[in-house]
Length: 343
Ligand code: FAD
Ligand code: EPU
Image 1 (cartoon, helix red, strand yellow):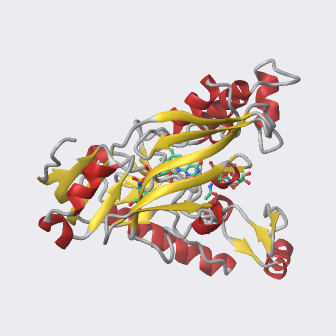
Image 2 (cartoon, protein in one colour; image 1 turned 90 degrees about the horizontal axis):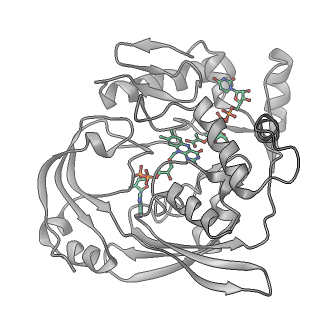
């Protein structure tokens, strides 16, 4: 085990996909649960506010972080169990592995189930925090259990799916257990025989454009999704962003029917208890798409994505987000909630 070291006054610019130049008063990396436990025992760490950092792809820093940033670098990808009876295998991933690296590993091992979640940035350990989702799939569909270290005691606890309380972009780790546990590994149950889901959005037409009309492989579905995502979402390496800034709101059927009278084009997707509407549509129809103020604004191809064109300040992006919330509320009577963790 390395002896964990604490760095001081570290720029976080290269550690968040928004590219915000905030500083951390203290900063340390850990590559194993033992290193993490040792760090948590340091008096300077015990006394400080803690931020667990993965890939920084769902964070907006609005000021310097006066506590300690703990960067997760726990690696490891392995198949731990084959269950021939159910045609599944368990794959265990260290929480600091890249999510897309795990998707590629699964495809290389002829395992399917997470191909629709291709190219989502960030780490495996952060993925359960908001039950990442895209193209008709969510992390919870293949999730088996995770291990997490309790910050106050250093004890490792196992959480199965029920204990995680997953919802749309939600889990207990964002709710009642917020800031109490650090995910150290996640185990997935993947399929030996693929059951592909190509019904969502443009997947089927993209596969056709790729010349694949029947029986795609999981890797081809992954490639189609990568191509769709590249065409829709800005690459953080080129324009700072954290993906969707807001969640898509879920409205009651009554509220949706009311809006539909005034706005017949408003899209909507049935969900238990109501209708989910695209926040991007509400933001675009409030006039924000492509809006730019100096170095920050709203992406010109995806109204749900706020962007940093260069040297934007996180506080300015936050203020813009609140203006957008207020204008969508005034025009549609709908409340938007940030998906991004605002620090
Ligand atoms: P970070 O941003 O580092 O952290 C996010 C939160 O999780 C923070 O509160 C942090 O403290 C906490 N955290 C991180 N690691 C741990 C840990 N090990 N234990 C406990 N807490 C932890 N999300 C989707 O769901 N679907 C998408 O399609 C999608 N597309 C995106 C596209 C782009 C271009 C970008 C930039 C982002 C997108 N996102 C998407 C959001 C983001 O990729 C996910 O939320 C991702 O899971 C964040 O991982 P991260 O490692 O970067 O987390
Ligand atoms: N739309 C607009 N204007 C726009 C963009 C979209 O009106 O500028 C409308 C269109 O009607 C479109 C609909 O919004 O059909 C949905 O757009 P899109 O397919 O791009 O998906 P999204 O709802 O904006 C969600 C997730 C994404 C995920 C995609 C694909 C949320 C908050 N966002 O975006 O997740 O990748 O679906 O499944 O649920 C993220 O969480 O960071 C993220 C990128």
